[in-house]
Image 1 (cartoon, rainbow, N blue to C red):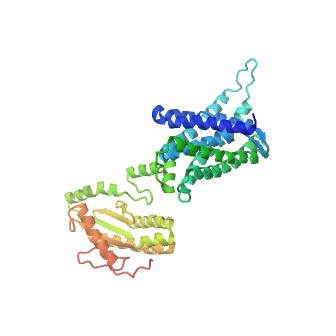
Image 2: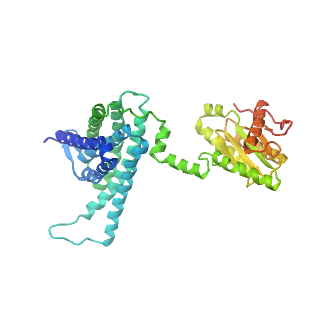
Image 3: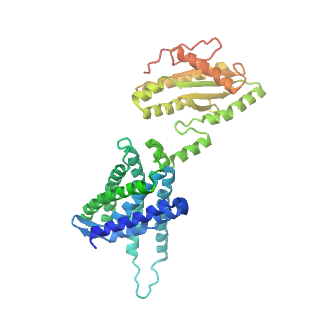
Length: 427
């Protein structure tokens, strides 16, 4: 059998079996498909390291050209028909399982040379080489799989109707990167000649075309009526693939805002009314300071969301530096924040709010071209309201008045007398 026919036969056999298991995932369960996907990684790496065939354009390995490329194609098909949260399961399973295999093989060598058996000579050198290549190949697979999906999603806006072309371009780009990266490790470990780099790349470009066509054929024949999941922002897809959103959910459950480090609104809702109840029982005042960043949308529009995010963080830092250690800062929504000051009179709260305003204006003017400022409203329990919602509403009305008067100021007294400050210069 010729080399080209061999590669094509293997590709059809690999994709055919894996696609059949994927198609039967509702009947057999997804575990059958996932086990079949992961069980051949050692064979892929072994063949990629030691088994080469020669074609007119150079040396290539079926393990790399057919099996590894096919695995990426199957992972892409998995994503196309499922979603990021589902496809990340085999990606992380392969990463953990292969690292575990290498670790277990490494611990076996702590025993020393194995017992010799008649007619067999164990090759520990090969095992050591394979361990290095397994770690390198597994790491690349993890990066390749995530990057492949992100590129595929990015191409949606350019090629909204062509799944096959999106798949082909995505596979070609990732397989090009992988060929260079894996060959570098392979050459350093085994001394594989340079012709395997060029020959393998040409073969992988052919694999990208073949596997993209097979993906299109599978979708057209077997899942024609299944709608492709709607496009997602790249940041959302990346968060799901890397479990970033799980980390954010964990922080949310702990009550801390991911971006600014302030407490969440949920924590404010939980702590607000009990704080007022304690104040009422002790016959003390509790003040609430509410502030937001002036012209924050303009800052985002003009300087970008990265700068906007940093402004949010720095505003919270400035506020914390000027309030008492027991005062709590909450992110109430967007660019709006609340500071709950237990056992603080109204006049003391006005003074603290003014310190925060000045600190933000002076500090951020040095750090940002936009020179961000904040407007602040203050209200005090029980004089202004008898409930936490009423207190927020009262302080928010003062905040609105500060905005109406020109921003970059504190409003909080019953006569709506504002702290006289210069007009802000933010865009």
